[in-house]
Amino acid sequence: MLDKRVEDLKILFSQEQIEKRTKELADEINRDFGTEKDLTLICVLKGSSIFCCDLSKHLKMPVQMEFIRVSSYGNAKESSGSVQALDLTLPNLENKNALIVEDIIDTGCTMKFLIDILCRTHRPEKLKVVTLLNKKMARKTPIEPDYYGFEIDDKFVVGYGLDYEGYMRNLPYIGYFE
Ligand code: IMP
Ligand code: MG
Image (cartoon, rainbow, N blue to C red; front, side):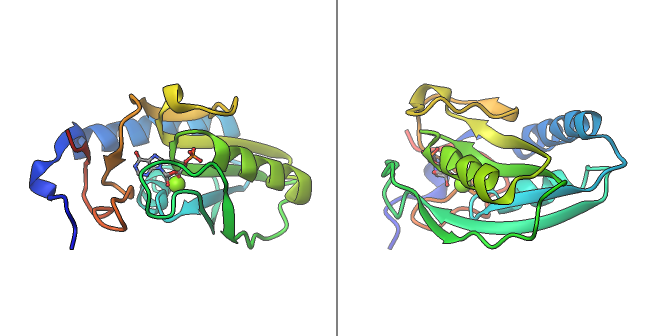
């Protein structure tokens, strides 16, 4: 049984705020990547599933979506620092534009791991990173996203893809427990 209740969440970003910001991020990405060349979205499961799908709806270039799975947290609320690749199956990305889509960058360990692997083995022509949330203060490795939705304090947040012990990903807003 879950020891936390959705009713006790404090809302950090409402559904409307997230929708507005997601559209703004897509506008920036459309401008930077242009509308001619294909873009491969690399959605990091499970957390960024909802953000990635919503973002993709506003993109104007031909888009392909790929899904990879890594794990750094297990069920703990603290990042373990060691990243585990669960499924990194990707098509050939040589000469392609690619965009890693994350829900949140916390310590940065996951993103560093992904960028290293992608650059070493997949070698896309252009690789950028978008994350909805940026926990800048929690960084343990010097990784910065090319685009982010909101910067947040070092607190544990849930909703809109982000989970608490596997639950609450389905909430349309982002909140935290005080
Ligand atoms: P990092 O490797 O420490 O940057 O952690 C990245 C991953 O940890 C994210 O993709 C999330 O899945 C998870 N994570 C980090 N902070 C939170 C949080 O506040 N709530 C839920 N998941 C989080
Ligand atoms: Mg994630």
